[in-house]
Structures are given as structure tokens and as C-alpha cells.
Amino acid sequence: MKELLKEIAACRRCVPHLALGPNPVVSVAKESKVVIIGQAPGTVVHKSGIPWEDKSGDTLRDWMGIARERFYDPKEVALIPMGFCYPGKGKSGDLPPRKECAPLWHPLLLSQLKQVQLILLVGKYAQDYYLQEEVKKTLTERVKKHEDYLPKFFVLPHPSPRNNIWQAKHPWFKTTVLPHLKTCIAKALA
Image 1 (cartoon, rainbow, N blue to C red):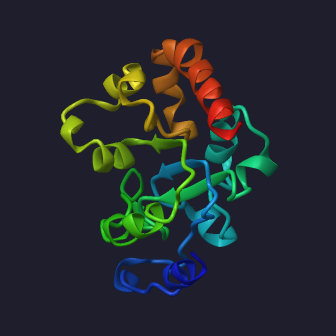
Image 2: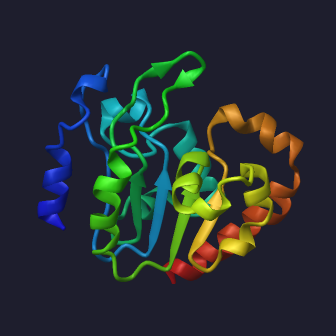
């Protein structure tokens, strides 16, 4: 695992496409029990080098019902983005994750994780990649039917403050999905 993480840290495959340059952000250990597959680092995370070190991370930890210390213990939780570097700014927010990362690094990382109990697919990009047969379903449909993907995957919207409107339109997310998520996380980390 150490050698693989060194390779990822040294990756320069997308340099011409990265406005802020490469800074692959990932946290994982062979003992990880929960894997969180998200989108790509934003500018705050790009600068800090710490995955989910922003408001979205605060919300995600709250959704999961776990303390910051446990969230950042790679023996408990692996943090693997779809794109490992900040992809740059687009017209209406950050650009999508670079498409090179997941096929290049995910199989190598996931093949070394032998104790994984649950994988959280956070946001559309992770869900589209891992739930290919379900690609025609909307994120809302997937989240509403989250139990269909268990025991392997738990699907979630992105916890960005930009998704507060989505949450307000779908109160079942807080009353049904989040309590189930907390139960699944507690069981996976037990």
C-alpha cells in the first residue's frame, strides 16, 4: 500500500489539465472498513491536502454520525475521490473529476482493502461509475432506493451546501436515509 500511495502522490498524468497543478488527495489503509468514494477535491482541500476538510466534510461526518478523529483514521475510513486532484473551475462550480483517475487507481487501491464492510458512493460521478447498469436512474431515485444497493454500496447525494435545496425538497432523506446510514456505519465500524 505504501508504494501505491507514493505512486499516486507522484502522478502527473493530468498536469496539462490542472489549473492549480497536481496534488493528489487520498487517505487509505489496508485495514479500512468503510470506503468513501466522492467527487474530487475542491480548492480548500487542494490547499490543505486533507480530504473532506471543508463544509461538505463537516456535513458528511454529521450524516455518518462519526467523530472527526474516527473519520480521519484510515484504518477505519478510506477516503478515495473519483478524481484525485482539483479539476479546476467551470461555469457553474468546479469542473467534473478527471476521468483518468478512477480506472487507473481505484482497482489497485480497492484490491488491497480486505476488510471493507461498506462503500459510500457520494454524488453522481461515483454512482455513475460504480452503478453503470443503473446509469439512467437519477440521483434522487438512487438515494430513495438506497437499500437496493446494500450491503455493498450506500448511495448519497453530495453533502455540499449547494445541495441544501435538494434536501429541502426531499425531507425523507433526513428522516429515513440518514438514520439508516448511521446504523450501517456503526455496524461497519463495530
